[in-house]
Image 1 (cartoon, rainbow, N blue to C red):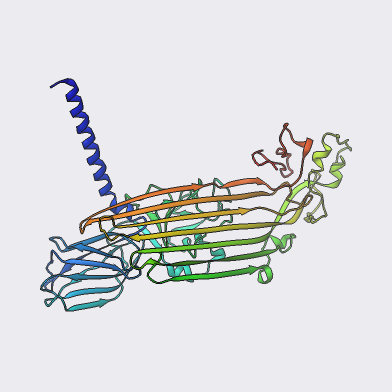
Image 2 (cartoon, rainbow, N blue to C red):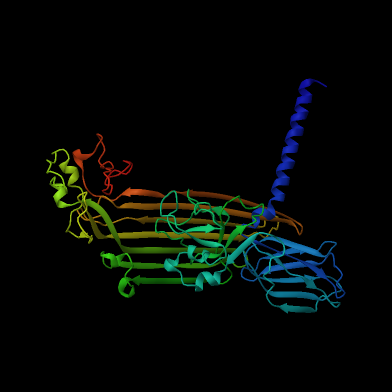
Length: 515
C-alpha cells in the first residue's frame, strides 16, 4: 500500500471517529440541555405483588395542547420521558392482561424530575383504573438546589412595578444586592445568592441567555418585564448539574407561555401616582415630596392555529413613568462666584474662568438651599431640587409551537423577544441636574429555536439554537445646551468633565453622545 493510501485511510478513520464523538455528544446532551426549559417524568410500573412489569406502554398526554408522548418500561419496570413541556399531564399505562391505569392531575414544572409510579391490576385492557391527585414535590433525583416560581404566584402576588426580580427575593438564600445602577453593575435590582456579587448571575429565557454584560436582565426602566409573558421560572442557587453553565451566583431560567387548544388572552392596565404616597425619608430633609406617576399596560393572546398541532402566543407590556428625583449638589455660593472667599482677601475672577463658573446652578429657578449650621469655610453651598425623570419601556414576545405528525420530526418551537427601555430627564437649563443628570438606555433581542425528535420510546434528540443581543448604555448626556467655544477639543460639542473639589462634577467624560 502506498503512503498516500495509508494517509487517506487514516484521515477517513479520523473523520469517522469525529462523527461518532459528535453523535455521542448530541445524544448524551439531550437530558442536560432539555432541562433548561422543560421537565422530566419518570417512574416504575409494578403489578399487584410489587414486581416490575417490563414492556408496558406508558402514554403521557399534555392536557393543554393534546400532544402525547409514548414510553416503554425496561426490564426493571422503569420508564422515562424527558424534554417535556411544563404543564398539566395525564399518564396512562397499558399492557395485555392488565387493566389500564390512568393518573391525572400531574403538574410538571420547568427543571423538575417528577416521579410517577403506576401499579397495574389484573384484568382486561378495556377496563381502567383512574387515579387523581398531585405528585409529591420533594426532589429525590438530583442534588441541585432550586426553587420554582409558578404561574399562579407570578399572576397573584403583588409586584412593585410588575418587576419579576422581586419574586426572586422570596427564595431562600437570595437577598437584594446594594450595588447601584450602571451598565457594568446592572440597571435594576440585583440578586445576591449565598454572598455572591450581584453581577455573578445568569438569566435565561427559553434556554437562551437573557443577560447583559453585567449578568443581569433588567432594562433601563430598572425592571425585569414579563409578568404577563412568563409561565414560570426556576432559580437555581447551588449544586448546578452539567446542563447549566458555571456561575458563582444564581441561574434564573424562565419559560414563556405557549398557545393551547383553547383561545385565551388577557388585557390589563395599572396606574399609580403620588396622591396616596407618603414622602420618602430623604424628601423630608428639605427637598419636598416629589412627583410620581406610573402607567403600565399590555395584554397577551394565545391559541391554536391547528388543533393538537400548531399553536401561537404573543404578548406586549408597556411602561410609562414620570418620577421626580430629589437631587443635591454642592456648588459655589454667590460670594465665591465674585471672588470673595471666607477668611481670604477678595480675588479677581479671570474672564477665561467666568463662563465655566457660571455653568454651576444658582439658588432660585427651582433650586433650594439646604439649611446648614453655618457657611462653610470653602465658600460652597448645598442646593436641592426635584428633577423630573421620565421612563419608557416596551416589551414584546412572539412564540410558535408545532407538533409534526411524524414522530421522528417531533416538535419545534421558536420565540422572539424584544425589549427597549429608556430613562432620561426633563430638567430645563439652569435647574440643578442640567449638567449633572445622566440617562440610561437598553435594547435587547433574544431568539430561541428548539427542535425535539423522538426516534423511539427510548431514543430522543434535542437541538437548541439561540441568539442574544443586548445593548445597555449609561452616562447618556441629557443637556440641551450648545457649549460652543467652551468645549475643550475642536469639533466636540459636549463640555468635558470638570472636577474641582469639593464641588460636584459637571460636564461629561465622553464625547460619544454629541448633541
